[in-house]
Image 1 (cartoon, helix red, strand yellow):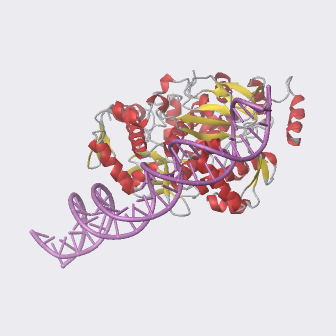
Image 2 (image 1 turned 60 degrees about the horizontal axis):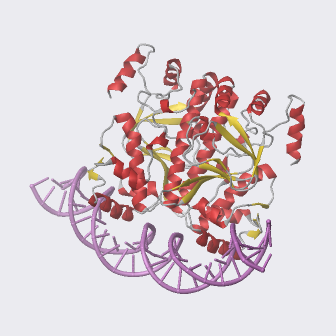
Image 3 (image 1 turned 45 degrees about the vertical axis):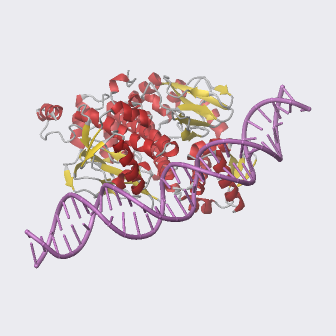
Length: 259
Length: 259
DNA sequence: CGGTTCGTTGAGGCCCATCAATCTATGTGG
DNA sequence: CCACATAGATTGATGGGCCTCAACGAACCG
């Protein structure tokens, strides 16, 4: 929060509108020049507040906007014809909901808020125009897409080859790792997902998620109080999950980047 | 094949070396100018022939090259600490094996050939330099990354919410759809995967893949002869799989793109 | 205080994993 | 040309992890 207001004031000096993308993963890209950051910020719509459970984009719908969830949680969701639902990804505060809309006019998943959220829209044509003009912006888009790739690949390993206990441990590991970058390194964090929604994220049933989380609680691996989760021993959780934070590429400086 | 030789000759006129990327998905990008196509072709290493089962990049290894599988099949593979193996993606002829290496110096998966293959390497620094210089190349990289995103997301739905029969149908649907673009629309195609490898792709056991494929054969959904597969009724297969080819974004012209 | 959402618990069953053996095709050396 | 080895496909028996169905409890809310 402190960091956010700092960024806001520093940008207010430059343009007529305060920063709408402050704290966003897009703006945090190390590939961006400050000038490009400002250009992105100006290209984006005014923030909109939406309630939990509203569709930013419906499954299979077409859209011309890339939605950035400045605050709050959302999910990408898909459904089978039989009614099964799966979240291919969670959208955490500051994340982009539908980067695919940068290139494709139709989305094969939907984006829905899981909590009250404030959202900002980046029109595709403006995004593409900026990318064509600014190499840093273009590089940031691939960078963001590749990070999602990494998370989706790891998720495939979980869904395909891990049991319920490990899948849940992996989900909690990933979420805590992704949040840690934005919130500083706390061991407790907001986790607004319903058990049913957790089930949709890890490919299980709500009932089984319940039983498995009870087991994890009994072991002391996780502590839940209301909608907040606390992980007493992150290393242990990660050991259970087989989770290696090194491949999340959150600290971009450690990677090759533009070199 | 006809198309390939056309591209070759048209490029031979321009540069000293014949096209190394002909027929490759990278070169087929609709975002590319011919000048950019030539630049990419010149940035790439000479083709190398490798046998089946060789690692282009080992799991968790660092590399400075993006490998393009000009011919033959490969897979991205990951393993759990318990020894479970999962393919987050198949690399078909003309596909890029490790696009992630464009931005990250360390890969969290490995890339291994599934058949004899000829491979070409694109050094990261050269790729990034080209991307910074040519908007079409930069856009192509995001486009490729986003396509992989789509496939990974659909795979997540399969792994999380579909049974063995549907998963196999989905795999065969996707492979046939991806191949159709390159080979013309045939109903039969080379499918060099072992049943064990199919199992690694869909998150099942080799034994169960065997039984389920027998069922699909008995129903006449698929016909296998040696390493070639034939799908008598593609529509039926796709119905079983819940597969919608519209979201594969193979015919790029139909999409928004650069507009 | 009735309704709704979400968490929890129990019973029963199925899909798929596991283990292990057999069969077939292919290749190799003597 | 045959004995042998190996990789991959096939089959059977058994068990377990997770699903399904169903009910109940708890928290929240107008």
